[in-house]
Length: 468
Image (cartoon, rainbow, N blue to C red; front, side, top):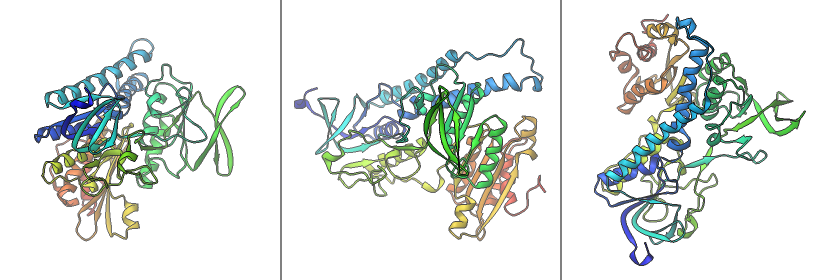
C-alpha cells in the first residue's frame, strides 16, 4: 500500500494483546471501522503467546505429573512401572494450546471485519501510524495497547540462556538441576512450582518479608508453608546482589540477616515485575512523555494529553493483568462509540495459579487498617469443608473483610484448589455492593468448595455453621 492510497479508519489499535484485540472486537461490534496493528505473527500478546496461557498449560501438566509420581498410590491408583517425564511432549502440548487460542483470536478478528496489520506500529502525528518501514494508515481515534515487558536487574542482565525471564522459563528444553527464582510474586511462584514438580531444586529469593505481596501476612505465611511442603526453598528478607562462579558453577549471591549467601543455579529466573512497553512507539512524534515509571498518563476516559490518542492495559496505571486490560478495552470502545463505558477498579481480582491457588479482590485487612476503616473479618478453613476433605484439597482458607458499620464486603482472599474460580462470586457480590450476610445467605450446592466462601461470609458475624 503506498502513501498515496492511505487507508483511513475510525479506530486504529496498536497492540494485539488482551486489551488491544478485545478493544478491536468491541469497536467492530459497535459499527466502527477498525484496524489492529500487531508486530507478532500471532495475536494475543504476552498473555496468550508467552505468559498466562502457556504457563497454565505447564502448571496443569506438572500437577498431573506430581500426582502420578507422588500421590496416585495413596489414592489407590497403581501405575505400573516408573513414572517418567517426556518434556518434549509437554512443550508440544503447551504449544498446541497456544496455537489453538491464538488461532481462535485471529478467527474472531477476521469474522468481525477488522483490518489486521502485521508489523511494528509507530505514531507519526496527525492521526497517522506507520507500520514497519513504510506502510501508513490513519485513524480518527488511536488506541495504544502495547503491554509490558519483564524488568531486568541491572547487575544481572538477561542472557536468554542462564539468566532468563518468564519468556524463556516456559520453554526450557531440559529440566534444570537447580533453579533460582528471584522474586516471590505470581510469576516466580508459578514457574518455580512447575519446575520443582518436574524435579528441579528450586530456591526462591524474595526481598520483602513475605512472598505473595498484596496478600495479608497470615495468608502469605500460609502459602509459604504450603510451598515449602512441596519442596520449594524460600528465603524472604533477602536482597540479591549478583551472580558469580564458585567451583566452576554459577551461584546467585544475596544478603540475608546481615550475612552473604550463595545459591547454586543452573538457571536463574528473574521475576521481579514488569514494565510498560512503549519502545519505538513514536511517543515523541506526538508530544507524549511517559512518567518516571514508564506509564502513559490518561484521564478517567483513557484519553492521553494528545487529542484522539488513548491508552489502556499495562502501559497505564493499575494492575498489570490481562482481564483489567480487557475491561478497559471494552469500556474505551464504548466511550468512543458514545456509550457509557466504565471499569470498576475496586473489584479487579488477582490470582496466583499455584497449587493451592491464591486469589484476592478489594482491600486486605492490612490496607483497611491503614485507612482506619472499621472492619469485621470472617475466616473459614478448607480443612472443615466436606468436598475439600473428600478431594484431598484441605490446604486452604477463605478470608472475608467487611465494613463494620454496613457489613458491605470490602475484600476477600482465598487459598484453595480452584481459588481462581471461587473468587468470582465474591467479585459479583462486591459489584452490586453486597454484604457479607448476602454472601453467607446465598444458597450453595453441597458438597462444594464454594461452601467455604459462604461460611467465611457467615463468620464475619460469627454465625458460621461448620466452624467453632
